Image (cartoon, rainbow, N blue to C red):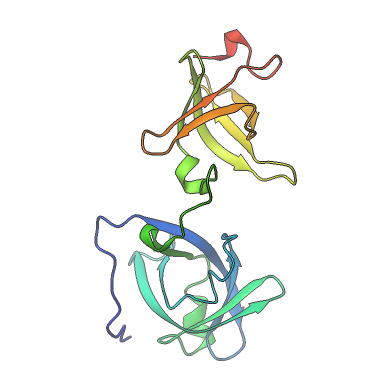
Length: 188
């Protein structure tokens, strides 16, 4: 397949996942995409995307987006070099990624999930609480799943009252100890 003059990200470029291909649609090679992005217009303005497919031994490939439209459960995308449902089927399960520098900066005191995952979490006294392993989205606020060295999990609401600071560059989050939330014997 001819990939044209697509610009491949260099090895130093950090890629951010914005969606996942969950199926095919129709006879023209369109794919169904579940969006992982809450940025308005993210897919409408998409002209190029890298697809990382864990099942594909060739690794990631870059595709030019030839068409895009909203669907009931996400988006339908068509790529210039994918013309049949058989070829499109080989992309199912793949993650759509874009270079980090193409992301709009988040609003003040807001963070992208990928910036928070893996952070070291400490309390205000500098005591290690654990590593932020997962973020659960709720209607009120995010809930951070922090795992300590013993494998125990703490659920910490992502509120300004409890999350005192976030250092994205240093990968450190400082949280306030609250009664019933983190007991002294829980920290390691």
